View (tube, rainbow, N blue to C red):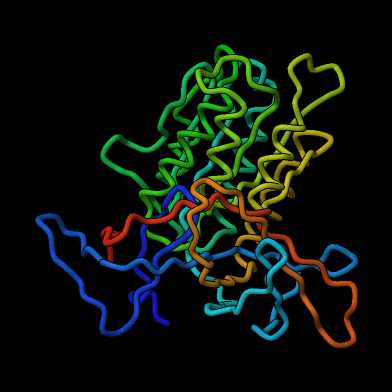
Length: 318
């Protein structure tokens, strides 16, 4: 399957639409092609590690087993290639970040350097409000200097609108044109200023196929520390949460995230349709390799199934 054959629009279920030869494409007045189909495809980003925590590459489709609600699913899509992704970097710019800001921005730059050069990247900073880092007419960039300016555009002030940043970041991810999507959240405290609730932020994470990584900079004395939120967002989506002991550990954490994104497998299957609108479907992935019994797979815990209306058109950019 080529990238042009996979035409999709991310829906609230995190399921995708799969195009096949012979299907009809309709041109509308925009630059989008409209694909009429009721076939859905769930795409999973899967990270595989050995018992030492080292990432494992070079596996094949036959090494993976996928279950949805405890029912094994035939794998219809598989890739182990380092493909470009759409990725958002969310940087906490609340006042408490001032003493560690230099290390945080340096680590974020390192993440960009270690990522695929063709990635679509955007930056959001958040304090009491969420602000774009890139110019208003630039949605994404792969230019290191432009992204460096985006990281340095804001200044620490006020409180922390973490939930608002996550919701806004996930929305912006869906406008990207890369099949795989990830969000990297860097914060030193819990939410103290959002208009969205924690429940709404978690629902947004559950309702997207994006992988969320988080880096928390906490000390036991921080009154607003909330590592549980960062852990849960990452766990639900199949990402990972990092908690370096000091700001100097930020670079290693961001480098590890970039490596994880570039070595994840893409595993896809067509889910069974039913009328369970909004129902949570659990996902479990196992890796089986002869002579290597201690491999573990990490992916999202599940997704919310939203049936497509009969005859509905699904649009995707090519």
